[in-house]
Image (cartoon, rainbow, N blue to C red):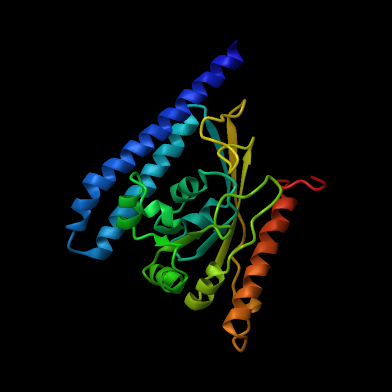
Length: 264
Protein backbone atom coordinates (compact mmCIF):
# COMPACT_ATOMS: atom_id res chain seq x y z
CA UNK A 1 0.00 0.00 0.00
CA UNK A 2 2.82 2.41 0.88
CA UNK A 3 4.51 1.80 -2.48
CA UNK A 4 1.24 2.45 -4.31
CA UNK A 5 0.68 5.70 -2.41
CA UNK A 6 4.25 6.79 -3.21
CA UNK A 7 3.72 6.02 -6.89
CA UNK A 8 0.41 7.91 -6.92
CA UNK A 9 2.02 10.93 -5.27
CA UNK A 10 4.88 11.01 -7.76
CA UNK A 11 2.43 10.72 -10.66
CA UNK A 12 0.43 13.65 -9.25
CA UNK A 13 3.57 15.70 -8.58
CA UNK A 14 4.83 15.04 -12.11
CA UNK A 15 1.52 16.14 -13.62
CA UNK A 16 1.52 19.23 -11.41
CA UNK A 17 5.07 20.14 -12.43
CA UNK A 18 4.32 19.84 -16.14
CA UNK A 19 1.14 21.89 -15.67
CA UNK A 20 2.99 24.65 -13.80
CA UNK A 21 5.73 24.66 -16.44
CA UNK A 22 3.16 24.93 -19.24
CA UNK A 23 1.19 27.71 -17.54
CA UNK A 24 4.32 29.71 -16.72
CA UNK A 25 5.60 29.30 -20.27
CA UNK A 26 2.26 30.40 -21.71
CA UNK A 27 2.07 33.43 -19.41
CA UNK A 28 5.61 34.40 -20.34
CA UNK A 29 4.79 34.13 -24.03
CA UNK A 30 1.60 36.22 -23.91
CA UNK A 31 2.57 38.73 -21.21
CA UNK A 32 6.28 38.94 -20.49
CA UNK A 33 7.52 38.54 -24.07
CA UNK A 34 5.56 41.53 -25.45
CA UNK A 35 6.80 43.62 -22.50
CA UNK A 36 10.37 42.41 -23.02
CA UNK A 37 10.12 43.44 -26.67
CA UNK A 38 9.74 47.04 -25.46
CA UNK A 39 13.04 46.84 -23.56
CA UNK A 40 15.29 49.39 -25.32
CA UNK A 41 18.63 47.60 -24.85
CA UNK A 42 18.84 44.22 -26.53
CA UNK A 43 21.93 42.98 -24.67
CA UNK A 44 20.60 43.75 -21.18
CA UNK A 45 17.19 42.31 -22.12
CA UNK A 46 18.78 39.01 -23.11
CA UNK A 47 20.82 38.94 -19.89
CA UNK A 48 17.69 39.51 -17.82
CA UNK A 49 15.67 36.85 -19.66
CA UNK A 50 18.53 34.34 -19.46
CA UNK A 51 18.90 34.93 -15.72
CA UNK A 52 15.12 34.52 -15.25
CA UNK A 53 15.10 31.21 -17.12
CA UNK A 54 18.10 29.97 -15.12
CA UNK A 55 16.36 30.85 -11.83
CA UNK A 56 13.04 29.31 -12.91
CA UNK A 57 14.64 26.03 -13.95
CA UNK A 58 16.65 25.91 -10.71
CA UNK A 59 13.41 26.30 -8.78
CA UNK A 60 11.69 23.65 -10.92
CA UNK A 61 14.50 21.11 -10.41
CA UNK A 62 14.54 21.86 -6.66
CA UNK A 63 10.75 21.37 -6.48
CA UNK A 64 10.97 18.02 -8.28
CA UNK A 65 13.57 16.91 -5.75
CA UNK A 66 11.59 18.11 -2.73
CA UNK A 67 8.46 16.38 -3.97
CA UNK A 68 10.31 13.09 -4.25
CA UNK A 69 10.02 12.82 -8.03
CA UNK A 70 13.73 12.91 -8.83
CA UNK A 71 17.24 13.10 -7.41
CA UNK A 72 20.10 15.05 -8.96
CA UNK A 73 23.75 14.10 -8.71
CA UNK A 74 26.33 16.46 -10.23
CA UNK A 75 30.08 15.96 -10.57
CA UNK A 76 32.16 18.84 -11.91
CA UNK A 77 29.55 21.58 -11.37
CA UNK A 78 32.26 24.24 -11.03
CA UNK A 79 33.10 23.86 -14.73
CA UNK A 80 29.47 24.56 -15.60
CA UNK A 81 29.33 27.60 -13.34
CA UNK A 82 32.44 29.15 -14.93
CA UNK A 83 31.71 32.33 -16.88
CA UNK A 84 34.13 31.60 -19.73
CA UNK A 85 32.09 30.75 -22.86
CA UNK A 86 32.23 27.10 -23.90
CA UNK A 87 30.20 24.74 -26.05
CA UNK A 88 28.51 22.25 -23.75
CA UNK A 89 28.05 19.02 -25.71
CA UNK A 90 25.94 16.35 -24.03
CA UNK A 91 24.12 13.13 -24.75
CA UNK A 92 20.33 13.36 -24.53
CA UNK A 93 18.62 10.52 -22.63
CA UNK A 94 15.61 12.40 -21.18
CA UNK A 95 13.20 15.24 -21.79
CA UNK A 96 14.54 17.03 -18.69
CA UNK A 97 18.14 17.29 -19.91
CA UNK A 98 17.89 20.89 -21.09
CA UNK A 99 16.03 21.91 -17.90
CA UNK A 100 18.77 20.41 -15.72
CA UNK A 101 21.65 21.90 -17.70
CA UNK A 102 20.09 25.37 -17.85
CA UNK A 103 19.49 25.18 -14.09
CA UNK A 104 23.21 24.46 -13.58
CA UNK A 105 24.70 26.78 -16.20
CA UNK A 106 24.30 30.56 -15.81
CA UNK A 107 24.53 32.75 -18.91
CA UNK A 108 23.72 29.92 -21.29
CA UNK A 109 22.03 29.82 -24.65
CA UNK A 110 20.86 26.59 -26.25
CA UNK A 111 19.93 25.10 -29.59
CA UNK A 112 16.26 24.15 -29.79
CA UNK A 113 14.11 22.26 -32.22
CA UNK A 114 12.29 24.31 -34.82
CA UNK A 115 8.96 23.00 -33.47
CA UNK A 116 9.49 24.91 -30.22
CA UNK A 117 9.27 28.20 -32.07
CA UNK A 118 5.54 27.58 -32.64
CA UNK A 119 4.84 25.82 -29.32
CA UNK A 120 2.37 28.04 -27.38
CA UNK A 121 4.21 27.42 -24.11
CA UNK A 122 7.72 27.97 -25.46
CA UNK A 123 7.71 30.38 -28.39
CA UNK A 124 8.04 33.50 -26.26
CA UNK A 125 10.83 32.01 -24.15
CA UNK A 126 13.00 30.89 -27.06
CA UNK A 127 12.60 34.22 -28.83
CA UNK A 128 13.22 36.46 -25.81
CA UNK A 129 16.29 34.42 -24.79
CA UNK A 130 17.49 34.46 -28.42
CA UNK A 131 17.98 30.70 -28.52
CA UNK A 132 19.24 29.23 -31.78
CA UNK A 133 16.96 27.17 -34.03
CA UNK A 134 18.32 24.01 -35.64
CA UNK A 135 16.11 24.52 -38.70
CA UNK A 136 18.47 26.52 -40.90
CA UNK A 137 21.95 25.05 -41.28
CA UNK A 138 23.21 28.12 -43.17
CA UNK A 139 22.91 30.52 -40.25
CA UNK A 140 23.37 28.02 -37.43
CA UNK A 141 27.13 28.42 -36.98
CA UNK A 142 27.02 32.22 -37.25
CA UNK A 143 24.16 32.45 -34.72
CA UNK A 144 25.98 30.21 -32.24
CA UNK A 145 29.28 32.05 -32.74
CA UNK A 146 27.56 35.38 -32.11
CA UNK A 147 26.14 34.16 -28.81
CA UNK A 148 29.59 32.88 -27.78
CA UNK A 149 31.16 36.21 -28.69
CA UNK A 150 28.54 37.92 -26.49
CA UNK A 151 29.69 35.88 -23.50
CA UNK A 152 27.13 33.09 -23.50
CA UNK A 153 27.92 29.40 -23.46
CA UNK A 154 26.07 27.21 -25.95
CA UNK A 155 24.29 24.03 -24.86
CA UNK A 156 24.05 21.63 -27.78
CA UNK A 157 22.69 18.09 -27.99
CA UNK A 158 24.35 16.87 -31.20
CA UNK A 159 22.07 13.81 -31.37
CA UNK A 160 19.29 16.20 -32.36
CA UNK A 161 16.65 14.34 -30.34
CA UNK A 162 16.52 12.04 -27.35
CA UNK A 163 18.74 8.98 -27.52
CA UNK A 164 17.11 6.01 -29.29
CA UNK A 165 17.91 3.41 -26.62
CA UNK A 166 19.54 2.96 -23.22
CA UNK A 167 22.89 1.86 -24.69
CA UNK A 168 22.90 3.73 -27.97
CA UNK A 169 23.29 7.27 -29.26
CA UNK A 170 22.12 8.89 -32.45
CA UNK A 171 25.00 9.83 -34.75
CA UNK A 172 26.30 13.29 -33.81
CA UNK A 173 25.63 16.12 -36.23
CA UNK A 174 28.57 18.42 -37.03
CA UNK A 175 27.07 21.78 -36.15
CA UNK A 176 28.82 22.02 -32.78
CA UNK A 177 32.17 21.16 -34.38
CA UNK A 178 31.82 23.85 -37.06
CA UNK A 179 30.87 26.31 -34.31
CA UNK A 180 33.87 25.41 -32.13
CA UNK A 181 36.20 25.82 -35.10
CA UNK A 182 34.61 29.12 -36.10
CA UNK A 183 34.51 30.64 -32.61
CA UNK A 184 37.75 29.14 -31.31
CA UNK A 185 36.24 28.05 -27.97
CA UNK A 186 36.68 24.74 -26.14
CA UNK A 187 34.10 21.97 -26.02
CA UNK A 188 32.87 20.90 -22.58
CA UNK A 189 31.63 17.29 -22.79
CA UNK A 190 28.87 16.37 -20.34
CA UNK A 191 27.54 12.89 -19.57
CA UNK A 192 23.87 12.57 -18.66
CA UNK A 193 22.27 9.45 -17.23
CA UNK A 194 18.84 8.70 -15.77
CA UNK A 195 18.18 5.69 -13.52
CA UNK A 196 15.60 4.28 -13.77
CA UNK A 197 14.78 5.63 -17.24
CA UNK A 198 12.21 8.44 -17.28
CA UNK A 199 10.91 10.81 -19.97
CA UNK A 200 12.80 8.93 -22.66
CA UNK A 201 11.96 8.90 -26.34
CA UNK A 202 9.79 5.82 -25.82
CA UNK A 203 7.96 7.09 -22.70
CA UNK A 204 5.11 9.55 -22.11
CA UNK A 205 5.11 11.96 -19.18
CA UNK A 206 2.72 9.72 -17.23
CA UNK A 207 5.02 6.68 -17.48
CA UNK A 208 6.38 7.32 -14.01
CA UNK A 209 9.00 4.75 -12.88
CA UNK A 210 8.36 2.60 -9.81
CA UNK A 211 10.80 4.67 -7.75
CA UNK A 212 12.12 8.20 -7.94
CA UNK A 213 14.64 8.55 -10.75
CA UNK A 214 18.16 9.92 -10.42
CA UNK A 215 19.69 12.15 -13.06
CA UNK A 216 23.49 12.03 -12.97
CA UNK A 217 25.48 14.86 -14.54
CA UNK A 218 29.20 14.26 -15.02
CA UNK A 219 31.20 17.13 -16.47
CA UNK A 220 34.40 16.05 -18.20
CA UNK A 221 37.53 18.09 -18.87
CA UNK A 222 37.25 20.72 -21.63
CA UNK A 223 38.53 19.65 -25.04
CA UNK A 224 40.32 22.09 -27.32
CA UNK A 225 39.69 21.66 -31.02
CA UNK A 226 43.14 22.72 -32.25
CA UNK A 227 44.83 19.32 -31.67
CA UNK A 228 41.93 17.62 -33.47
CA UNK A 229 41.98 19.86 -36.54
CA UNK A 230 45.22 21.45 -37.80
CA UNK A 231 44.86 24.90 -39.35
CA UNK A 232 45.70 23.73 -42.87
CA UNK A 233 42.94 21.09 -42.81
CA UNK A 234 39.83 21.84 -44.94
CA UNK A 235 36.93 22.98 -42.77
CA UNK A 236 34.63 20.10 -43.71
CA UNK A 237 37.25 17.52 -42.85
CA UNK A 238 38.19 19.35 -39.66
CA UNK A 239 34.56 19.38 -38.50
CA UNK A 240 34.24 15.68 -39.29
CA UNK A 241 37.35 14.89 -37.24
CA UNK A 242 36.16 16.94 -34.26
CA UNK A 243 32.69 15.37 -34.39
CA UNK A 244 34.04 11.83 -34.51
CA UNK A 245 36.50 12.51 -31.69
CA UNK A 246 33.92 14.05 -29.34
CA UNK A 247 31.32 11.37 -30.11
CA UNK A 248 33.87 8.63 -29.39
CA UNK A 249 35.04 10.49 -26.27
CA UNK A 250 31.53 10.76 -24.80
CA UNK A 251 30.57 7.20 -25.77
CA UNK A 252 33.70 5.76 -24.16
CA UNK A 253 33.10 7.64 -20.93
CA UNK A 254 29.46 6.51 -20.85
CA UNK A 255 30.80 2.95 -20.77
CA UNK A 256 33.59 3.82 -18.33
CA UNK A 257 31.14 5.39 -15.87
CA UNK A 258 28.80 2.40 -16.18
CA UNK A 259 26.00 4.41 -17.76
CA UNK A 260 26.18 2.17 -20.82
CA UNK A 261 26.42 -1.57 -20.25
CA UNK A 262 28.50 -3.91 -22.36
CA UNK A 263 26.77 -6.92 -23.86
CA UNK A 264 23.30 -5.26 -24.02
